[in-house]
Length: 161
Length: 161
Image (cartoon, rainbow over all chains, first blue to last red; front, top):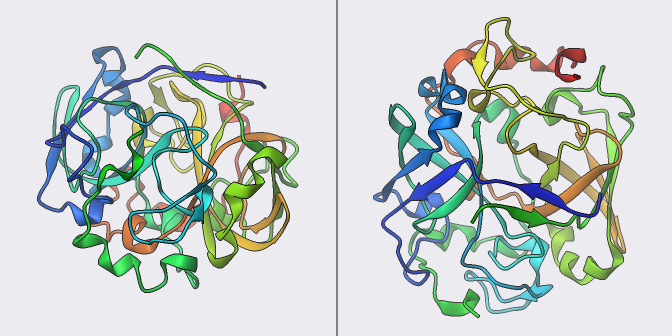
């Protein structure tokens, strides 16, 4: 399988029109709400989604170009392997965020705690289920003691080309 | 952006050679270990990954063909909107699992709690960081009271065409 082709199922709308000043993770963006506009053709696939408090969004970092295998992440000043970071410039520029579901109107989901750039192409929505998705982590690598700081951090231009 | 093209960064090796009898989520597969074989060209991107106890794997459900917008999930007998389920047959057949990292040898990661079919093409690896990824969920929709049962559940042929 040499290449895998996906087509967006919709678009993420958010207040973040530029890449700088964005929150770097959803928990750092509690005030920011946005919308998921799903292609009307897929609306029947949203049945039953209203019952979940949180959703997993999988999307394409459409403003990310190219990648390097080691990067200086937002939360650190040492170069780290890209797969040990959440940097958007990665071999496959696929992003993952967990957001709160605030409401639904047809093919549009209103979501909170969003950290995604406006107009981001959406690949998939999955229900967030802590029993599947939230194991107890015992080691956080280079993020140990740093992950707590993310609420105050905002992205800069480090990942713009 | 009409289509998004990814290329596998490696392959997931697991004991699950067939789709039936597989655990349906990683927490249901605590005994199963597997390997992530990353393309040697990407090995520098694994720097610093050893420090994390858990990794997020994003992969392509390569054995999944086609999709329906409502499905009967493993844990239920009512049809549910596909985006309210974790079913592999989805508009973009992208999968997400959180696994434990047991060790690394060069470009090969030994992982535990894996629920992924053998030879699955890997799209991305991200560090799992509970501060980003593990919010408190307050509602589980149709999975309420059912998500606890997943340890005993095994997949069946429901998603084979």
